[in-house]
Length: 308
Image (cartoon, rainbow, N blue to C red):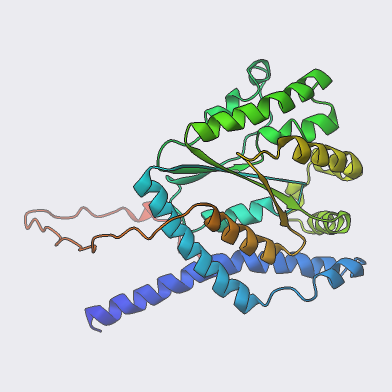
C-alpha cells in the first residue's frame, strides 16, 4: 500500500474515532431515555417526541464545534479573556452543553472551573476570592460550571448563608462584574431552564441507571423537594443581577440537543471573531543515528492484549 493510501486510511480511522466520541455520549443519553420509557413516566416520554432529527443535530453540532475552534484561535490571537457562566437547576443540562463546547478545544486555552464546596478557610475569605483565582489571563476562556451565583441559589435556599450575606451579595455582584468587564473580560451568563416535570424525569432516569446514580447527591434530592424555593431564588437573582454590562441569557433546556445547539450558536455570536490564517504545517524529516540500537522492552511491561 502506498504512503498516501496509508495516510488516507489513518485519517479516515481518526475521523471515525472522533465521531464515535460524540456518538458515545449521545447513545448514553438515549440509553437513559430508554430506561425512563420502561417506567411509568409516559408524559415525559411524550414531551421528547418531535425532538430534533439526529442527523441534523450531528451535522450542526460538528459545524458549530468547527466554529468554536476558530473562536479559540481568535481568542489566542487577540489575547482575549472570556468568562462564560453556566447556571441552572440540577439536571438542567449545563454539563452536557459544557462537554460539547470543550470537546474539540485545547484545554490549555479553554478550561472548566467547577469548584467544590468552600473549605473552612475559604468561608472566612472575601466571598469572590476563590473565584478570582480561576479568572482567565489573555488568550484564555474559562467556563464556570456554577459560579459565584451559588450564593443566590443553593446557599440561599439551603440556609448556608445569612440574610446579611445574601443582601451583601446582591449589592456587590453588579460592581464585581462591572469591574471584570472594565478590566477587559468578556462575561457571558447562561441560565439553563427546565420544567418541574422534566427535572423529575431526569432524576428518575438517574435513579434507575446504575452508571448515573452517583450524580444524585443528598443535596440534589433536597433541591427537588424545594423546587418552589429555588424558583423564588432564581427570580430574585435574575431581577437583581441582570445588568447591561453582564446580561443573563436563558437557555430553554427541556430538549437537550436543541439546548446545546442554541447555546453554542449564541455563544459564538457574542464574540466577533475571524478565522486566523495559519502557516502550512510541514513535517520535518526524521533524523537517523546509525550508531543507535533500540533496547528491547521486557514483555512484562506491556499491558495484556485483552481484546483481539
